[in-house]
Length: 141
Image (cartoon, rainbow, N blue to C red; front, side, top):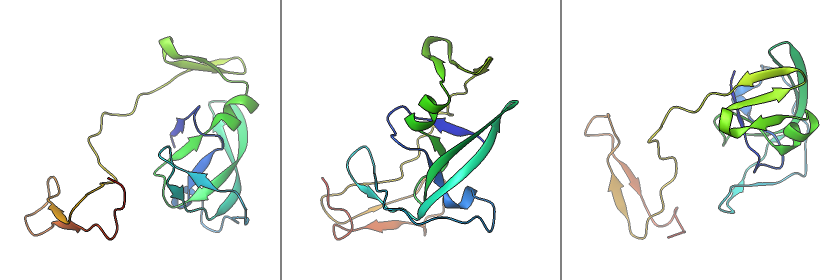
């Protein structure tokens, strides 16, 4: 599994579907907000243990259905004493240097804000698969 390293995220986050079946998610009062201030629904918190090369790490991650990957936030980056060489595209954890991989360029749009009701045709899908967006659901302009 890959993970997104995010210095702007205060806490690590994981998509609930990425957890092994039967994983016990503990209740939490933790709240999440997207960069634009939109609240993100939280299901709970879980301790996630994982390996990066030969090193085992763990992090308490907030669980949500909204994100699409695991996000290792600043909490992990500090706890693991990560040395990030941005210009070289690599990080050092312990004694190991790890080359980072950029996300493939994606033109995916996951959220649309509209002023008036409109229909937006999907890319690469048949003509009958249009989605209708209404102002009842989209509030920001």
